[in-house]
Every structure is written in structure tokens, then in C-alpha cells.
Image (cartoon, rainbow, N blue to C red; front, side, top):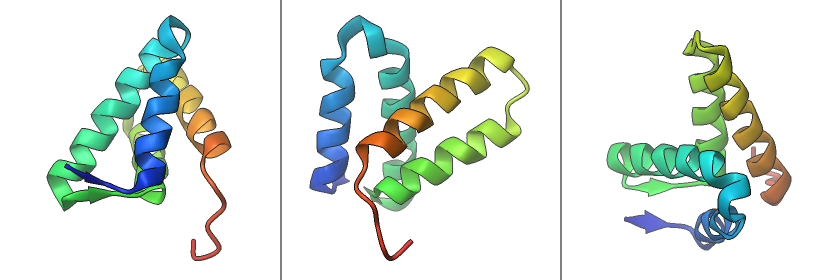
Length: 84
């Protein structure tokens, strides 16, 4: 699995949150695995876009809230990208 350093650091930060971020860490891990399986690598932009896409198709309000929470944490922890 190829990841950029910032994505590896992002996942490590989520994991360091322990039980407080357990659900979000699980979501993030699943998103990363899906992207890597599809593309072979992952970027912060890929993670953000995938979380948004999953929110748009979900009909489960609890799942949408979990995705939103994960997205907020990812956006808050990722550096700005002038190329986006």
C-alpha cells in the first residue's frame, strides 16, 4: 500500500485519539483501503472527495454524521493544497 507521508501521519493522528476517535479512525481506514485498492495510492484530496461522495449517497443519518465528523477532522488536519 503506497501512501504519501501526510496521509500516513493523518491516519496515525486518528489512531492516537484512541476510543474518542475509534469510529472516525475506522471510517478513515476503510476509505484509505478503498482508494488504494482502486488507484494504488492515496492523497488527502482523494480522502476528502471520497468522504463527500459517501455522504451524498448515504441515507443513514448516523452514517452521514460519522462521515461528516471524519471529514471535518481530515480537513482540519491536512495542509492547504494550492493545486486543488
